[in-house]
Image (cartoon, rainbow, N blue to C red; front, side, top):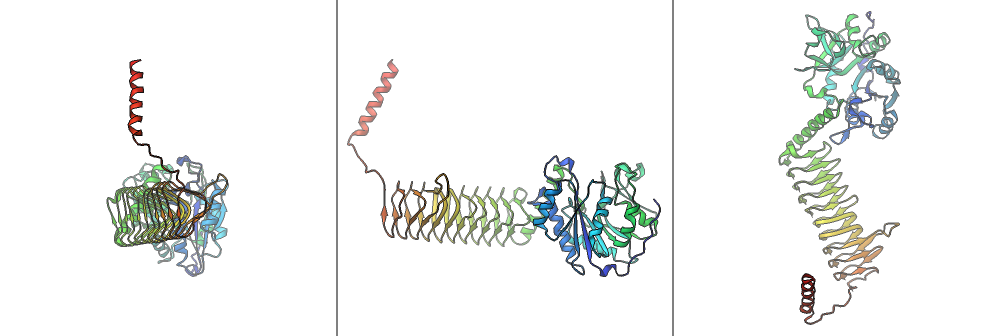
Length: 489
């Protein structure tokens, strides 16, 4: 390929920055109907993590900058996701997929008046904004390079492109692994696939790319060689942490990066004052926030936007999803808590399930084998054993006995139960909704409540007990005789 002319623009660092995210890959090795960039890692899609980095970098520069995402395989699902997750992103389609150089060519017209263009891969989620900022600073450095890109030294370079330098250390080109000769394959410095380009030079170089290579694609890396041939400076900037360049092409790699991100989250939580017992067994999304003196026992999963307040303890084996636990909360082992608010000092479990829409006030006790859904329990209320509370409001200080069921579904629609303050609900009570039990009422054990119960009333619906003197002895005698007769036959 002949050299490509291109003069650096003195005003480029003053122009808005554009970030192009390449998200058109098919992800064949993932063996999945879900587009690769939408696979979750540590609780969030790969693409979202890259978008976070892009947005942070764009926020640093002059003007608003532009975020351009190139889609291809699974474009409808990726575009729909972007509309919700990053509505300000400009979506462009690469069809057919013809390599990274072609993808950037498709994206460049949407970069507006950006003087510099950063290119990120949608499947590289560990990259930190600070690393990209260093790259942009290198592009704006002495001699106004045509391009700055991240490199890393790996003991086993594998399928990464090799960085070829001259005797003085200047970058000459990047050779993709499939096109590398024996000498080039021995090089340990590799291309991390993160770039910052001078917009003017990039625009002049892209039309000159050739697909005459092992993969029949237009390589973005060839722009680096064109810059070197044109006498323009090419900066290969070593990544401070080589893990930042790790991408995802398989389920194994997805699992590896998931572990790295969760380890980062655990380390950050401990640095902020939380205690994680055997942290290697704890699954912690990096969107989770743990306050000081929180204790998390082994084999716990905390995911989504969960928040845990100061001094709370999450027992072994608990699963907490998108929930808020106040200060001093105790989750005893093996509770499942989903989209729930738990007030200060509440005690839950063991083996309780709090489903979506549950709101427990301060000091509430919810015990073993209790299930709640769309249930609000006010301060000091208790439901300690074997109970289902669905579509219910429970007043302050009310005690719900063992085996109580709110019968909230009639086969067609859900209905609510309202239980006032200071109510005593005996064991094995069924409350057939819609129904209201007013403050101070007492519901006798075994009662089926089908009508509203007034304030301070007593409600029972049991059949009167009948006691037969000596009946137990006669019953046993009869059964023994029948058993003996059957055995002799």
